[in-house]
Length: 213
Image (cartoon, rainbow, N blue to C red; front, top):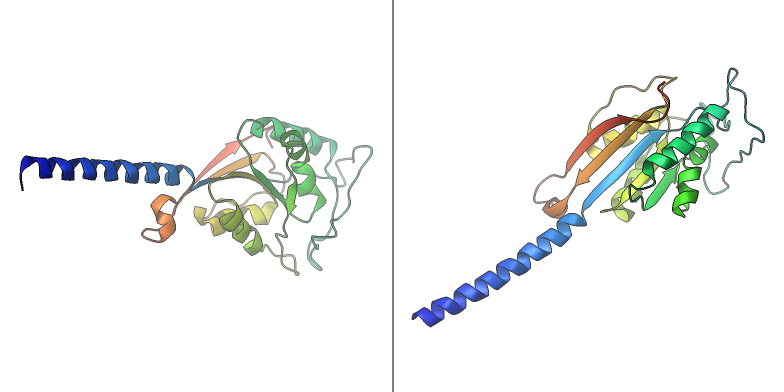
């Protein structure tokens, strides 16, 4: 083969390499999912008076557990302040979807963010009928509908931990009863891993927001 043949092969190979690199870059950028996970903000209890008024209604499309902890109080005044602080924190994060549980307090925690970002909160149960943490449906939604997106999820003391674990982020420390200021950033890298050639990689970073608890 003369030099013209080798030159042609070289040009064709270089062009193919550029095309493949372009596909990889585009695919990589579209296959990194970032999930911001928070526990609901402070709710009304015997020591935190409710704000006035106190709108709180269960959604007809999202059933509450039939046993276990089924109390459904709204956020307290302190919780409403944290709700607005969360909205400020995520306002420029590029959030494309928002999830909350069937309980009012999670829905209210993301309400300001949803309004400011013109997004509808997706209500997905995070509990089994007996009240135990069950995020199977939520994880499936994230892995099916939100690949390559940045999303915000409001959960509960037990479901936040379960969600991070089921997303592949490992086990985090237990969340105490009076702990409301954690913001977990779960980054799921898929890239070529989505094809099953390698396992996906998940990184979890815990941040703090709002008043310390």
